[in-house]
Length: 358
Ligand code: NAP
Image 1: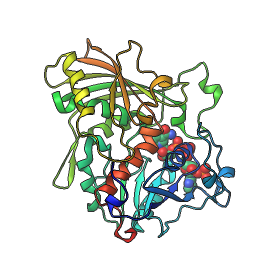
Image 2: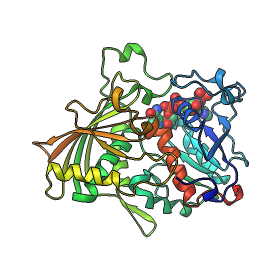
Image 3: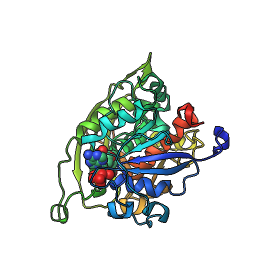
């Protein structure tokens, strides 16, 4: 695994967290507490939180305890700081667009979970094991810093499961029905009266995100622009009473003939090949195929690969398309904070950290 010394750095990189008090912000705090490259230097949120200690400003809901060092830090307004070359954003999308742009203009490398810049033509929508070449877009941006985005939390799991099939056989179309966890709705989220004994068959904007982002991620970067993959996608999204872990039931039409064994081999090869990025947050196996007849399940499998692996199971024929299967990924780890941290590690390993921080 690459170390700070391999990167030519003698000290950890100071980072600020934008939207530190929310559901994803808390996950960032948890994952960065012991990170070998990054050091939390500033926590930022809205005026409602600014001036309070972090423990006062947020209702901690992670199972890991709130790290002492962070609990007493004072939350600040979202203003760029010269001493933080890297900013992770988990801001509400009503404010993320402008705030992230202002940080990039001030020279920061911004790695965002918000939707605002994902489909910008010059912004990488990154899943490191899938489309690392798209990072070459970042230096084309008109900022002194840069913005890199993390896809929608369901899209990440679906695309990681599809990428080996896309490379081996081509994917012409897929249909996906999601069963999404409540932590995906942020804090305080949906009420218990709406959620218990219930399924909500609507998540604002989610279906469109899966349908458009998947094609951008699987697209090809040519002459400074992404040519989206020509895949027909249909998504139907549901909120279910699960705390963490988005399940996706996927049916796929391939461009060439394949057997079940061919698909299993494609997933296996993908995980065995040098998707191994040598980065601190990269899972040893990005995709696990589980053979249990009722796998994968959120409670049992969301933490595989420390929450960074996608679990796939129940491969079978689809009478409408070609094959169907179930994919599960942890929405606030692989689908948000963990995915963003891995994206930042890759960007920094590729030399995208602003020069001033070296
Ligand atoms: P959340 O719990 O609602 O947190 C939102 C954060 O934004 C809070 O820190 C909040 O600070 C801050 N904020 C709100 N208004 C602000 C303002 N005017 N100025 C500055 N900061 C402001 O949401 P979340 O679930 O963590 O999601 C954060 C982002 O990640 C969203 O864009 C979401 O779509 C995306 N995302 C979420 C998930 C997931 O699984 N939850 C997955 C992928 C992507 P205060 O506490 O001070 O209000």
